[in-house]
Amino acid sequence: MSGDVPIGPEIRRVRLEIQDGTVGVDRQEARAVHFGGGMRRAADTAEGLVAIEAIPVEPKASVDPADASTLVLRGPHLSENGPNGVLAYEMGLKLPADLELEVVIVRNGGVTVVNRDAPLKVTTGRGDLRFERCKGGTKAFTGRGVVIAVDMEQRVDIESAVGDMQVFVTGPGDLLRLRTGQGTIQCFIPPATGFVCSARAEVGFAGSGFGLEKEKTAQMGMAMSGTRGDGRTKIVLTTGSGYLHLEKHVK
Image (cartoon, rainbow, N blue to C red; front, side, top):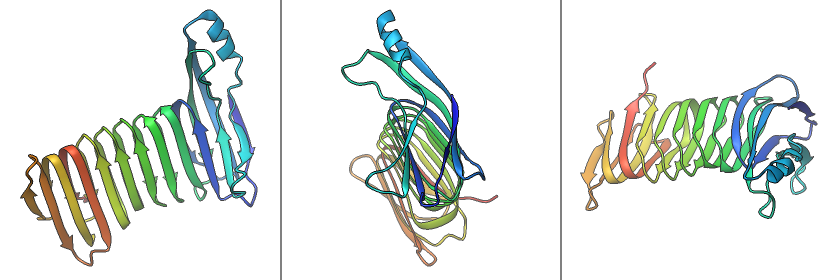
């Protein structure tokens, strides 16, 4: 599948909604959303596969009835009463970098987003997340998956129910929050960053390259806190079980 959806002058944000699948996003100069890729389809029975193969794979575009400035691309969803099987995208998406973007994967699927200048929001039930050069602020959640983020700027707020994170921030905003229910978090920031840090591993350890104070907790864990410079950036690092580390990012 491949197609283009024009973007009117009133559109300020784009939201992609799919049930399952992987999504990769990059920028383009044209004032349109370009999508391309394919669909993985499977079923428990031959009759079920025929029914699934009859479903159109192209996402449908419409303006959000609750917000005329939002363009929604929605992929096909298998209904609970329909055939038991799989209908999962492998999709690439390109759109102007100055448009806000939201990606919603209801069940399973990873997301990779690069080269965004506007705010970004990503949610997936389960899957790895990767971000590169996202400069407008990023908010993301995965139920289970590894998160890698490189050259991030402005607000960064990422949560994983289970999974490790490695995040490099080159232009911190007022908030840098990384949370995982189980896993290790490594966070790298410029050495001159002014911040107030609050970090806690319920079970595990915490450390930093900034000489922050550490204190053992009753639950075989560790808390770490401290202030540096003007305290402009609020840093919150949390893991239920794992290791936390805040380090200087020197290129």
